[in-house]
Length: 336
Image (tube, rainbow, N blue to C red):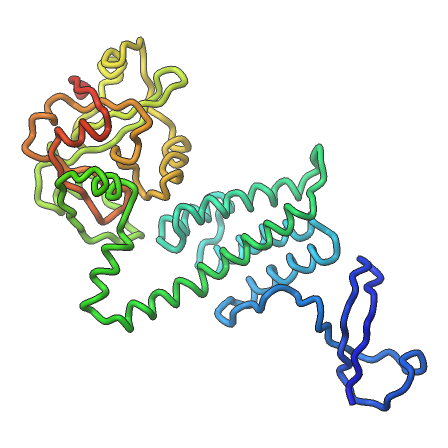
């Protein structure tokens, strides 16, 4: 028979329930030589899905072991290595982890909210790799491993299940699903406000992002009707300039529109951070109602204008008066 044993881990003091890997006589365990055994309890986390590649599986297993052995720093470092393994598994190599994660985002492999998760884990891993003012705690490591498990499930399991679900639903239903998937903060704002608008999809290849001018050409509209949202700073305060894609923002004119002396265009890091707040590929002026906005004066007279939905491949057409109302924008000549 295979006996069961209660044991105590000599490293961390954890109680263990063991099952012998071999059958033998019912004798006092003290009289028996050491035998291989399987740990039945506590379980080492939930099973890792078969879809997860070996390199990622190894890092997740090592991270769990770090938590179990009372080594938070080790657990968090392996979580960071797990992120690197995911990037490498998708062909994103030769770049820093910071840039590699954004490459996954641009490729549509993860959503903006998941990028935020990964960024937190990356920064926590950096803390674990260097001496700091305080040691990492067990709860931080446990949270990091749980988030890493969810990250892996999304990339390798849930995304595949959703794809198979769409296939089973058939072509008639998949278009409706796509509309749900394309829901963005900007679209939700328009719907809740009961504003009339039209959705204009266009082909998008994640490997080749189109310029806004190319999008106008794709949709067959004048570049004067397709608007861009440019974030600028008046001192320490951010504002949004909404203008035709071919127009160049006159920083002095924009500053005057707000009664300021000077303005500067925001850096890429600030724009990326604001976009990630709304899990957006591109910034939509409709999704920034908390930032003061100004609309180019000539655009306010157009019959309709097009703005980004917050996602590549989808533009929104609406009345400029509604755009002004929803963004609380003032109008002024801000393009030279």
